Amino acid sequence: MSKSKTNRHAVIDIGSNTVRLAIYSAPSPHHHRIVSLKTRCRLAEGLDKSGNLSARGIKLAMETIAGYTALATLHRVNAIELVATSAVREARDGKKFAKRLEKQFGFPVHILSGDQEATLCARGIISGLSETAPANGLIADLGGGSLETAEMRKRKVIRTVSLPLGHIRLTEKAHHEVKSLDDIVNKELSKIDWISHGKDLPIYLSGGGWRKLARIHAADTARPRVIEGYRLNAKKARKFAKKVSKEVIAGNHELSSAIVAARIMKCLIKASDASKVTFSTRGLMDGCHAAAKDFAAAKPARVSKKVLASA
Image (tube, rainbow, N blue to C red):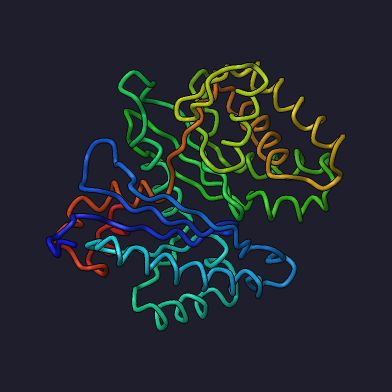
């Protein structure tokens, strides 16, 4: 195997629900992933009640990150970026967990602020937009612990907010009762005074729950299951959200990420008066990669500094 430089960049996203790895080839407009993996660890499970990360989640995350860093090393990446989001940011033992990771694996772990996370998520989604996609609109990334929302103008992030509406935490707050979801979501959305700027514009949606919705809709309507750029007008999206909620409730009394994603989508459309929703496969890791333009010659700490400075 050649020992020449590969010009590759790895990002490990330590999320509230999953821990993900993406390895990218040389910088390009398409931000090509040569490796994309995820493991469900549920670090945020029980966070609102205990104030701490899930003990089981910590164990799974440690094992997962051990495997990811080893794999990244085998791919001879030039830099490994470890970023942690809302669960680690908000937990009492979040910083302790990050320091444990740094000590064991030797890479800095950067706990993103809400604005940093929302900005990087938005940048990642913008990086995947086609040339013909509208350049203005709202962007929302739904994770396990939080909902990152941004306003985009001319493909630039104008303003951001991070809301405690991730599907794990929202399910726990609603006590597994779907009727409580809308009240909680609408109360949080009412705090965004610029959400009305999305009137008659698209909302770009990213996150596992929303991608699941797009796949369900594609299967129901016999459309191609290509999630990037999958579109629904506002009326159809709201009607579909109601249908999904009823179908899943009938078969399962415990809320799933699909129900939560559907209810949040419906509330977002109503609050913003958006014209349509467009689904995306991009997100935080792509935003980190888009921000690290000079990663090829950088050490991990330098890359991290540039990424955070740009967010």
